[in-house]
Length: 206
Image 1: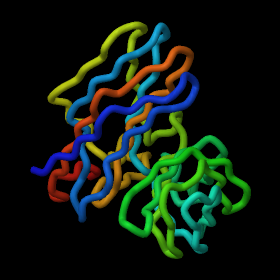
Image 2: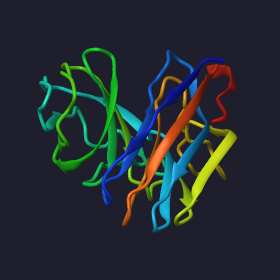
Image 3: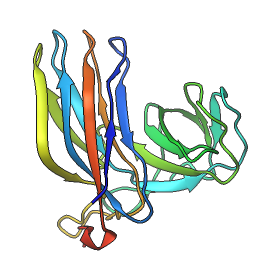
Image 4: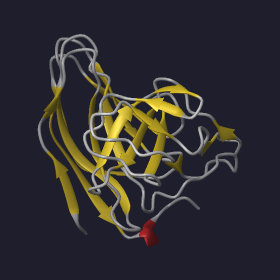
């Protein structure tokens, strides 16, 4: 199956470090491995799948700091009830070139304020809602202080599986997959993150 690898990434302490695997047709993204170097503080790492999708309803030029969303509740709770996005949640969106950018949001109504977008975003662009690191789309890992955390041969699959008949499952097919570090107190760095895309027939939501 095809692989997708991101390179070195770092930010100043207190700013999250993000790596994202874009969608690839109807295939399902899988986190297969990464190397992360923590600073003098332990960092939390989160692997995040979208809980839902929406669209943009206005054009946003490169450098703009707002995205106008068609709806503010594209995902569902574990009980299957519509869940509103909130300030400090995460989204990703598709730019005019087809690139996928991830941003933390400040939300007012359906207006998401973000760090400056890298490329033009057209009306009707896909927006994936990851929500917050404490929501049910996120898996928490720990990077110990002053150490290198390296995983190879992982199989963390995108999508939200059904659990106990209560969760609202979300297929990973055609979705992005995100990994981020909270990067608190003493900067860390990803040396690389490797993803793989697998056929939608191997999705495990049912």
